[in-house]
Length: 171
Image (cartoon, rainbow, N blue to C red):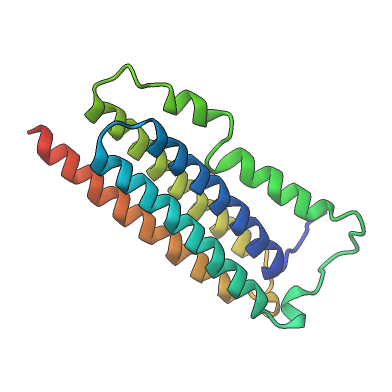
């Protein structure tokens, strides 16, 4: 049996992914000693918070049709499934302590580990949204999911720029 989802459900999960990302960046900022890296991670945490607000706004702008359930689901199992999937694929709760416990590395290497993990998580979120987009019918807000993907792509560009700057410093 195949399930279709609506844009409302995807935006709800997008908010959860943004909250997970904000928490990750805030934790990274707390344990990093480098002031500019701390500022970067706090800034990324705030961007995730802003993205969550964007998704809340986009979700509020959805038409009733785009919020309509695609299947009979009185227990909200489809949303629980999406939440579990998001929590197990993007900014993995179980990985965050492991990533952030690598403090025995040099500061620059530690920052690279955090950035590398963050780039991977942002890429995973894009893959997640691309997959979810295929499950949203056109009349249920499919085109609005592209806005989520664009937001996540902006994070990858920023993180990539920071990684390139660190790598340039190493030479």
